[in-house]
Image (tube, rainbow, N blue to C red; front, side, top):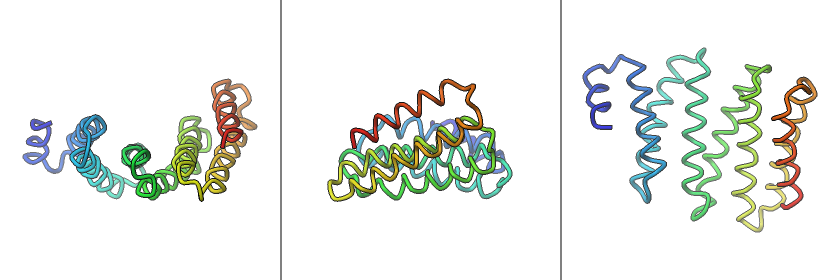
Length: 171
């Protein structure tokens, strides 16, 4: 990671190096406990936000940014569920944009639906918010069913629908 940081400093206009630097922060941040992991994930998000803002026509940067928020949400989901919620919401918003911009993208729709599932799991930990958790499960199913109705030839979408229905039944 230190080498990528050095390269990023000496070549600040090289966006590929910045992306690789963000990915390094993410990889180490996901595997690092406590506040250091959070700081690394937040640094990755800062870099990815700059890239997403600089290149709004490049959906890949926003996809990575949504993954950064999702990773940060997962960091908090078990111990500090309330703190995880805004990060889940950022990921959902980004992934909704990506799915709407790429209506044929199976990956975009599955990631969008999965973000709703992840938020539902976090909300489920907060007993007073079970109704919201169910709503996000239903949103996930709605997204997947809408995509499946357009592409019934894709069995993996059916599998995601089954998982979402199972999650809804247990929420």
